[in-house]
Length: 418
Image (cartoon, rainbow, N blue to C red; front, side, top):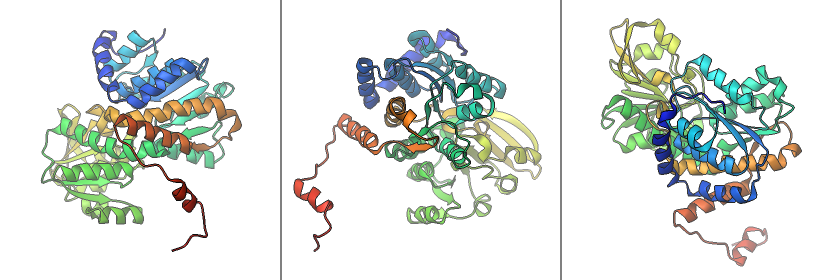
């Protein structure tokens, strides 16, 4: 079996951490149990480009239990947990091509390695697999029947491809499932981002001014958690509805030009390019800490920052000090890559349980339905989304009401007034 990881000797440590994560992933465990019996992915080759974490390991084991031949690479150069990669290779026989801190050339060589398996299904987090296939590996289209996409940034890219008529196979937007973005993006990103920032800096959040750039579901979660830790939160936005929502949620709202001089912490969660630019870095106070929790580091104009940097040094792990010509210092965390995985461990397993349940069930759905679908981006079927929520509620020991016949009749009628 071919693979490329840091050190196979880390496998035992990774196995223990995978077991720890599994304790809070009951929904995926139920799916894995069914997959072992029904084998819905029998004979399917899958190429997965995801963050190589303990939670991802559970997903890979579930897909394999369903009969799939899976090959895994990282979806970000800094998001791999090397012990997890080793465990998947050593204990589960799953080929992994991922090393934390890999350079750009290695990153793409790993993508090529999983694509060399000639997959029937792709499973993406950021759409790099799909992008490489469409730009460089047209030979694979004869094998591929469909794919899934995990995150907001990837869905944006894929919808742009579909709009331009260049997408060559159907893809399910897992990110758009309610049981994904309402929990993973909000509660997962909120907690793990603050965790990453604190691990990298050991700075006190309470009493600081924390600038959240973007108020989508990730931004909502981050603003909520920063406020809960005692920060004064500023939100910057381009969408008037989201800006108004942030204002009514109790946060200050202003343009980045106004936020730059007053922020102590900055974190981007937009999925867009250069939302913090050279002029913003130049305006920041001495000691400002800048991070990104979007999928790609393009949210920060790092080249623009270099242009005004007089000198720089690594002052702590994942912290680079930029001494500017003006005399101020700006600190960039995790090379501008997603800080919750660069300096921490990513989302807690209990929220990834639902996200990866969506991935597993969407893979099964695509095997059954892909040949009946157009080359477009599709939502997770509503009944699948609801079933995952029901399973999660049951696992948490919670119960909900059921509509009575009278209530169902009322909701489906038009002639019953006051």
